[in-house]
Image (cartoon, rainbow over all chains, first blue to last red; front, top):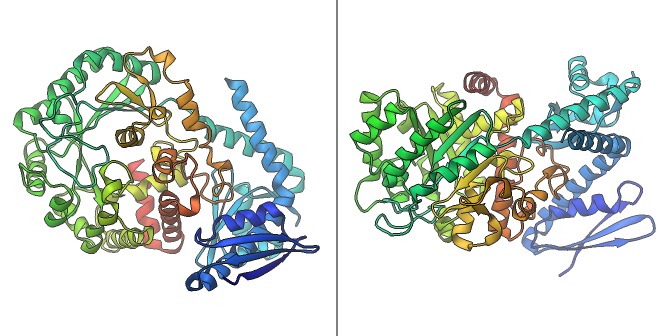
Length: 94
Length: 468
């Protein structure tokens, strides 16, 4: 089976976000991530009947995760503070 | 204008985007508005949208970050705290015997004459001690089956003893019944004791009787005749009706709504099949895809809204309440899961489960890990045990794979027992989860209709104001 390749600039997204995108790909497909110098290279292996659809799906998922990665770069610390402080507050109440 | 973006999740819906935050607030944006927000192009965002984003804690001026963080912390802590409050719903199973032979029976009922499937009356005091230990001021006790009316003496004794014990608490009683064994004596007692009835009405006669056959009666005819009898002679008895949808129901279009309106039932609860009990074995015959169910469901809502019918569809209402008033009463939509915190179930054999679904799954798997304890055990030793913690610890969906980025994680639930039943683990792979697919599509549908269709918005707001 020949795989379709998607290349993403490493500066745009981290590996975890990439794996989160692949979580939603049809589970009948196989994939691999290759760590190249400047790019993440994702090879997607699907049955020909769903290959095009899943490749388009993966493109959309990765694009949205690039946005999430961008958004979280500024708000990640605030989010962690909120969750940690909220849980401490609840623990203290107990 | 300089703003800081506070943390939020987003999800695309057709040509719009829904964003939500840890406080449970959300904002519906066009794709253009969303792009402007992501690119920090605040000057080009319409003023009323910008104000809304600011008031809902999606953005703030740079000097307000610390204060907004505290506000979000407080709102989030309050949401988690509310999810961890003691349960108000207690399910009691007087018997597993039933006079119906429903093909999708989720509780794995036994025959009407089977022996050894009734809850002993000597356990009533023990169960009441557990309820007393767990409950606050408001208690809802629901008799489930089998067919609870087949052990009517138990139900009557239980209600009397509960009223004596809980003089200072507000108690509601519900009997979930297929109405087979009901007669005037039972209706007199039900009316006199202010008991509500929860019944099943699956659609037109052909579908209802196919889903819910009985060797003794025409179930459809018995159900509608009994409803008419109650409305004529016992009109203070509150009836709520549930419709479980099977593959055959999908072809009936809106017939189910017409049946409800003809019977003057103005509360309809459309429920998809759940993968428990006999439904796991009959899924290939009775089941459907999430898309097939949602197409049917949207048709039903369109019909109610466009025909201006005086009918409230409860599944939509429960989702609306979760979105707009942060309600935590619906056990399927709770994070952490509704195990113990949503409901506790006392089964016919004295086993205690953290949810109705747990006892359903236990009936087919006999998995000991689902049992929290026995009614004969002291309550204080029952609920903080290893099994409860195992079932609950992975059910904070904010940190579950597949849920942590989802815009609906503040409104949805974990349903570990569904995933245990279908995938063999408590978290489940969400890309393969029927629960995730149905719930995501439900939130998509409801939010999209609310924000893009004025008729829907009006109807949904009416439901929220009248039924909260």
